Length: 113
Image: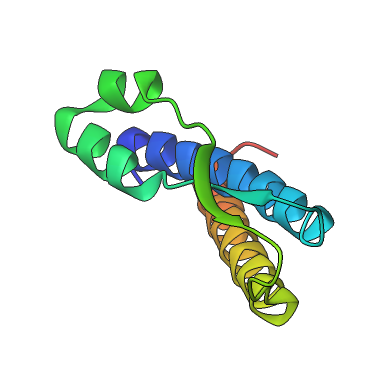
């Protein structure tokens, strides 16, 4: 894994963490009147920054975006939100594990303990 890939992986973990916060907010406020969900779409920005190089990856920032609003009588699917939360957690765990293993391989290769 090159230093560029490590930087991209780190930013992706940041994006997944921010998305987890948005999903938790959405689930916690699901039954609130006039609920407006939050979303985090970091993949497009990260992909574009990765094509421009390490300084662009370092500079890219993510944030919350307003999602759809729900009024009285609108269908609110807690089950689908739980699926999104599970999917996001799985992606975070897989990327964190992969990145950790790559660091361990690099440390072993240079003789670090």
